[in-house]
Image 1 (tube, rainbow, N blue to C red):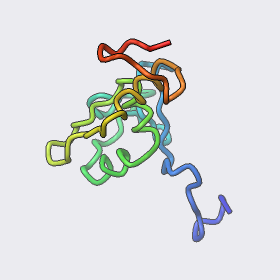
Image 2 (spheres, rainbow, N blue to C red):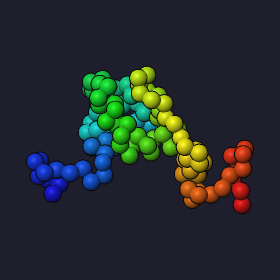
Image 3 (cartoon, rainbow, N blue to C red):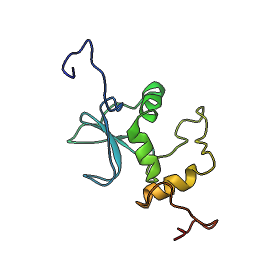
Length: 119
C-alpha cells in the first residue's frame, strides 16, 4: 500500500531519491525539489532556493540506494565522499562487470587485461 503512511514500504529501495545523469543542469541527485551535485553532494540552487546540506546519516542512506550505485557505475559519483566510510572495494570480476554495464554490454562479457572486449 503505497499511500498508507504507517505501512509504507519503499518497493525500489530509493527512499525518494532520483539520479539525473544529464537532465536539467548536469549530473545530480534529487529528492523532492532538493538537488545535490553527484560528485560533491553540495546543495544546488533550484528556482532560487538552495536546500540544506546533507548530514552524514543522510549521505550514508543515499549511498545504500540503487541511485548511488547507478551513479557510481557511470563514473558520476565519488565513492569516497565521506572520509570515515570504507573505500569502495570491488571483488575480482566486479570491475569488469561495472565497465560492461557502463558500456552497455552483457555483464559477463569477457575483457582482456587492457580492458578491451574479447569477441
